[in-house]
Image 1: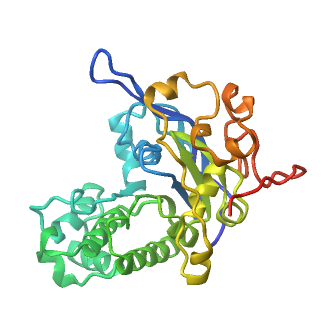
Image 2: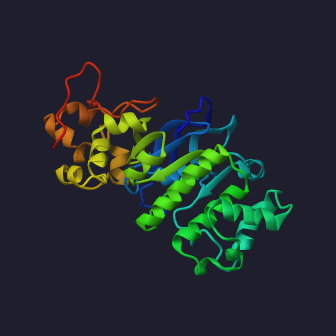
Image 3: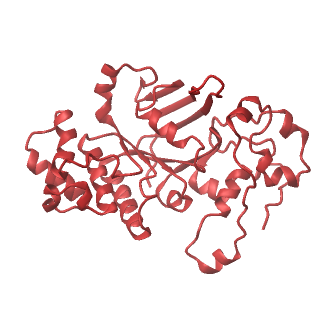
Amino acid sequence: MGQGTTPLLRVEDLSVTFASRGRRGTAVQAVRDVTFEVESGTTLALVGESGCGKTTVARTIVGLNRRATGSVVFDGTELVDLSAREWRSIRPRIQMVFQDPYSSLNPRWTIRRLVAEPLLRFGRGRGLGETEDELLGEVGLAPALKARRPRDLSGGQRQRVGIARALAASPELLVCDEPVSALDVSVQAQVLNLLDRLRADHNLTCVYISHNLATVRWLADRVAVMYAGRLVELGSVERVFAEPRHPYTVALLSATLTSDPHAQAARRPIVPTGDPPSPQELRENKGCLFRSRCWLYEQLGRPDRCEQESPPQVRAPRQAACHFPLHEPGHAEKEVPA
C-alpha cells in the first residue's frame, strides 16, 4: 500500500459531548481530545469495542454531528462549525459508507435513482445512463439491477450500491463505518477487496471504522485504537500489531482470529472483566480509565500512579495512553499473559 506525504485530514483535540435528556441525567462525553492525521492516499483504521466513540468521530468528520469542539481540517478547510451552505461545497469531496446499507438506502427508490441522486445533486449528471452503468460496473453490479429496489438485493449487493453512491460524487475522502460487519464472511472478503481496489484506482483517502482487527490488518496502513472516547494508541498497522504498547490493544489483538488453526489453538485471549466506565465515572475519574479492567495494572501490583494521574494524551505515532507502556525502548519488558 502506497504511503502519502501530505495530511489530507487532520483531527486535533476533538471532543463531543451529548447533553442529557432529563434534569438529573448525566451528559455523555462520547469523545475526548482525539488527535490524528490521515495522509493523502492512505487508510487509517479506527478500532475499539462498541461504544468507544469511533462512529461519533466518523460522523463528525462527515458533518453529521454538529456537537463537536476542537478541530477537523480537511485539505486546509476547518469543518467544525462550518455552516450548512459552506458544507454544500465540501460535501462531494467527503462521502460515507454506512454500516447498515438497507437503512441508508431509500426503500422506495430504484437502484437507478439511488445511484443517480448524487450525480444530479452534485452536478455530475450528464450522460446519466452511461455514468450509472459505469458506477454499477465499478462495484461489480450488473446494469440490469437498475430497475430493482433495495429489498430485491442481497446484503452484499446493497452495500455495493452504497459504495457506488459514494463514488458518484468523486470524493477524495471516504469514511467507511463498519461496512462489512453485517455481511457473511465470504461477502465481507468481496467488499473489502472492492474497497482496496477502488482506493488504488481512484487514489482515495479512507477512514475505516471497525472492530474486526483481521480486516484492519489487511486493509489499513495505520491504526488508531480508542477506548471510552479516548485515543489510547496510534501507529502503523505493522508496528502496532507486532509490538502493541497499550494493554487494551494487547487484549484486542489476543482476541483476533487467525487463519492458522495451530496458532489459533495456542492463543489465550485476554478478556477484560467488567464494563467500560459510565458517564459519571468518565466525569469523576482522575486516573487511567482502563485500570479497572487492565491485566497490566494487576500484574504491576496496582500502582498508585494509575489511580491518581491521567495517562498522557496520544498525539503522535507510537505513543500510548499508558503510564507503563509495553515495548518501550530502554524499559524492562512486562510479561504479556500467555
